[in-house]
Image (cartoon, rainbow, N blue to C red):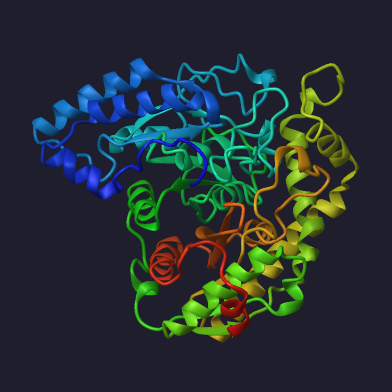
Length: 460
């Protein structure tokens, strides 16, 4: 990333694990390195809301002793991680990005935290987020807005949300990987804006018990990493091996692409990056096949909101009636408006979701597609002061949640102002491992370099 003083990139997760097992480093050294990076740089990037230095160092010492004794917990043994602050850690507050929950101390660990402890991952701290996870730009009027490390040093770009701090912590090289959540794009959008890999798995591929919900229907836990290989390592450890591992990454792929009428409104650099990525996939021998979702992408907005905002309003109902309570001005009106959603509208949206899920699966089968390649957002990250909170950058991401699919954002270039651009790959429900294998194949082909030339883009 250009323009910001960043620490060195971490070795890959696999390399860190090899270094631990061959005695070239220790978990204690890795934790101290992360703590030093956070102390030196997070005053600028503001990604962390809490850092658990003493607990992380104590865990590292225990895990080092285990490795010396021959007890190896697997790929995440001794590897530091950061968590979005809607995940319960026993004895720590879970604020969900709101001062209203400052005293919401968790009585027990979330299921994902229990799993991390069992696998030997070391939780460094919790990261900032949009209030109640309701917003894709990444801003937070009361709890601080993390600063996107991308772009020129004079820029203050939005980080994307709602998992803003987790994306920034990875992009700023403060931790090797991080956990976020995604209801309509809240992992993939910040990953694209910050220039890292962001995986939104199938709903409940990672357990949600002990996670502060926005929408029980649409929420997924996901993760950020610096590379697809790192994402595969982390997700594989957390979710376990699954069917389709490696299958999508072999040979010639059939990849669905959106028709031109679904790609209107893209910033020129985003359009050029998409065209360049698709041209490179074709040049590598992969086949691009025209694909349409079960409805125009714009038609996903109303039913998605009917579900997401209604469920979010139910979760946060206690905070909506007192205008003196500290609620983000872009959050409160949306939750209050949800009260006008009727039961009929909510149930119709749920019925549409089921019907469209079935239609999507049939079309994927008919065309024999491995995945869909499409933008993550229509634009690169704008400046914080330029954001229009009445518009969310989730036009291309929310259908993935509504259809209960899996998706991943890959770095796919930068515009002339060094703002990252993402490429989204969308896979079938339950095919998370296959999607990651395909993403590895795609990442090996596309060149996430500065914005492609008009000549290259036109050639596609």
